[in-house]
Image (cartoon, rainbow, N blue to C red):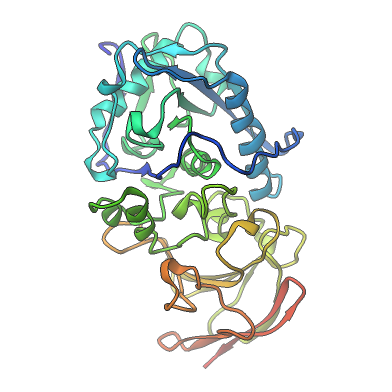
Length: 401
């Protein structure tokens, strides 16, 4: 640790991925995705296998390889419309940490985490592999632990940009002086596919103008409240519910994660501008909105700008692809404010307009024909009306009033 350089200049907003897990890492979505040809930009990750002297495990290197380079790659390719792939390497061996896991264990509450323990596990891990790897070959690093949630205290987290801040002058180096590029995430071996994506997405999004482009979309202050771990986390998903793994990680533990929202796709630069229809609130427009999961649709997102920093997004979520794993289907309307960096104290850079507040946890947020078909913004004097459903698409009217 003496030679471990970690200069942190920014104030910390703690970000952790927190889930409750059932026994082991078994999941019912066992069908292995076919190995895909990498397409577009390949984000190359170094996956460091880390174990502890006092924790036994039977996790194999093949299991880890499949999790990242089959399943996570499959998910990222689908979400990015094949613009981005996940590649890289898993270390050939497990690296044993110098101390028992109790020296690394952290709180399950984001705002109570001892940051020095995050620094310690990152430092011990990258220095363990320092002689064996060339960090310049990788765009991100993940520490994959042979330990469970119960052992470590968290199922997964992003160390940087996240737990340890995201200042533009932050530098992470090994003992020999190698610079660790991109960022570092940490996972227990039980981590759900949605958790892997959630924390890697923080890194892929990067930092711009002092803000993370892909923040957590659950409320950190609510997540820090006492109570059952899983229920407290669900109660914190007040902004996007189960409609984006940046909010929920997953809807049900035994199925894959849902797809990501158009807001997250746009922040990651995975959405072609030609697929975004911009409609001013003073403009009348009738259009066909295709399902977000189907990249062939002419229009995937409608953006209604309100001011320089605020706007509405309209998207269509249907039970195809990963969106089969949503709590429902229909048209989602979101309000975004780019001035808000993180989800604290009830504020969020993006929030769902809830079509049915009687359904808890935003599970009834989608608008649909025969249910709630109309939204009116009285202040900005425009309305959104669903006119017709055409297969998986919707005919929508945006009308000034």
